[in-house]
Length: 56
Image (cartoon, rainbow, N blue to C red):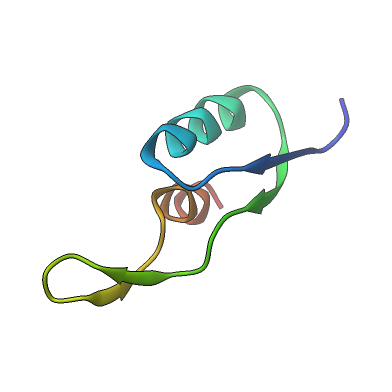
């Protein structure tokens, strides 16, 4: 099978990425850059990036 690229940002995209990675080799992830989040406005990654980093 060939390489797979995924474009995802939201929590739903993170779930899709996780399920795809269980069955395919995901080589690339396209997502938005880290942004301020929450009441403290601390910079944080989008959910898809968190999943991608965990998956390696």
